[in-house]
Length: 419
Ligand SMILES: Cc1ncc(COP(=O)(O)O)c(C=O)c1O
Image 1: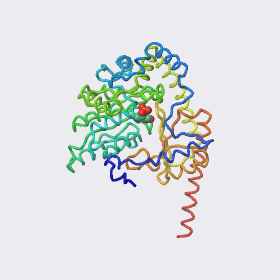
Image 2: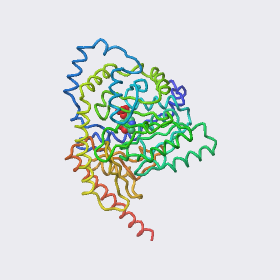
Image 3: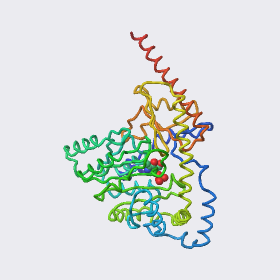
Image 4: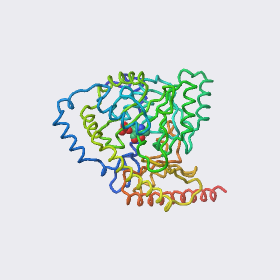
């Protein structure tokens, strides 16, 4: 028998099967209303348009679309993206863009070019589980920085940096990873003032900022906030975008915007990873954008998710028990909101009770590099139907009420047995 462990790299040894993903398998039980995944509503996928565009591409340029393509990506698609991003307040050029196989690949490539084992990455508390996985796979040390409704606290970020410098780690401090718009998982948006202060800290301590923004185009209320890459004037922001939430995650298509020199380095890393992102899906997406379908699709998604967000917020208001410490965020866009339970509750225990009642969510510790956030959880509102959102929140509220009763009885029982 071969001892594979002996042969694995240090990075591979560090890879662990995600316990959370195992836990989420129960959400596939029939009858469960799942607020767990981060999936777009499948009924909104533009299947007819994609069929149309695909036929056209195969007919017109099948021999190119089915061939290998350049690692940088399809120039025509990048030109369309330059135009699209202008509307988002981002002035860029084709040379500052790299097409990738969606944002998860972007995270992996960015981690690959910057991180040695034990280097430090500053993340929000809580942060995106896939970000944690990507940084973990390169052996990074992650520091979760205290955050509130306006994003990470700059003073806490700076205090963490100073402590590490005092301990002699100054050359190991590398990245600040931020999801500034309708964050996954908490649904919060980093204010413009915070964005500027974070950039100022990054500049003073010479760190790179990774702005991961898959939800930016999905705003339902409030005013748009300037992207960090636009606020940056020292060439230290890399922005990650994806078609997953505004078009179709099955296309596995996204793009990175950043300083040319960094894009060139990432291109080299990508060459080793997959040579190029599928030219076929790039051609289809280019034509889809050129025909103006994307704007139309974003409007359809926005309307539906806004109604779903409102349904989830009004259902929470209506059904949740009035408990001290029980609160939730009110996102202005995106796919998620975050529930804080009273400190004495554990979302893992609640999860099992919720599953009994046939409703699912993701426990808070999944979104923390050190598995904290135990009394919190994430709810997704894009996937379930509006009717199921109301029913699911009703079930969840009942699970919380029962859990509260159980805790109260236990306390009472304990005090009787041990006066
Ligand atoms: C913050 C964030 N980054 C990256 C991703 C990865 O998305 P994809 O690889 O589908 O583009 C997600 C997916 O939910 C996300 O929420």
